Length: 447
Ligand code: 5AD
Ligand code: SF4
Image (tube, rainbow, N blue to C red; front, side):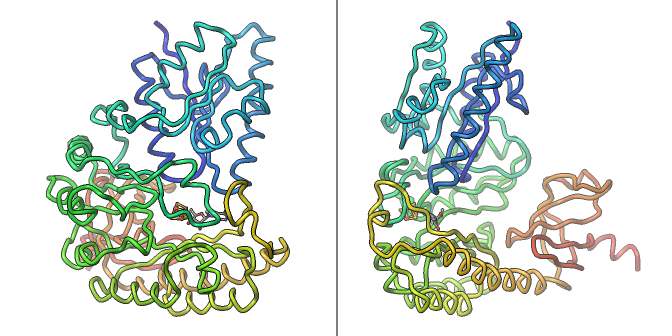
């Protein structure tokens, strides 16, 4: 049987990246091999994101292009392309997708990917029958057979938790990904062992609320368990809610060398009034104190965050409170967003929606400050020697790219055999997004 070609386009968060890989895994036994472009593909899957309006609109415009591509190919006597929409837009707007874009054959929500082979078979049998599968039971991970996954490279994502019970008033995640749910530690350990055996050295544990991980002993115990696996040398996790940052996890940062000193800890706003309206369950003050506690456990930890500007009711004074929180915390890096009104969320119906122009202006000011902090953080590494895990060849011949413990990209001249190894690199230069350095051994040899 000739291989069928599968193209998956992934939008949004790292959890979608993980899910796309698992979809490729479940489709491989059906004869689907991955291809780099939709042209010529037999099956196209859009793994979508619903978090902000822009992300959702991109999906509909991509679907329009795919429809044309399919019609052209059929007109030329080519084979028919099956078009599937997966991910959070599928979950949130399943029926609407089928109505808005008649070219879509399949709609499959994030909890139903294990049903993909069956859905595709059914859709092929009943030509033209359009199918949709949404919330299924917690069988997703068992059925996706992660033990059989193929690792690519020396770092890997590993989903340990899904869903959210926090209901921040701006956010669609509790509706698209469902309630918080954690995988069993033994299943996660098995997947990590399998990855380690394939050469993976660093795992990033994923969850919408990863630090709410509810397996025995919480995320701290899970990290210790995974750190004991031979070959697993680095552990990261994302995304964390300040509310779930417990003492055991804070302590683990000080005690467990495998746990990398980088923490993505979204704050969203520095104004207590806005935080309350967002239903964030923390204040600016409690967040700053939390960061202090984390830093007393692991003084060099790099903090990153998410920020929303222009939440309904945000006044200049609220925004300035965000700027002063940023100055107080000092971020290594950050993600900033203009508030996007999401249908069905409480904030979309709140009074005091902020003008786009005001959002733009605040975003620019916040970005300027965070940019300055990111540059300063990177510059502070110059002259230091950092352990770098080399991941892949760089753009220039003879160059490798790796990551520092703080998740900075590091470029250095190094032989390919160092890919997958953690090597001391003396940092010589810093830019906004990356560092440049020299292998310490080479420096010694040159003397
Ligand atoms: N508008 C803008 N940003 C949002 N985020 C979530 N929902 C919205 C929204 N409606 C941001 C938050 C979250 C990140 C993943 O996306 O900052 O932490
Ligand atoms: Fe969305 Fe808040 Fe849950 Fe994060 S914690 S996924 S922002 S509802």
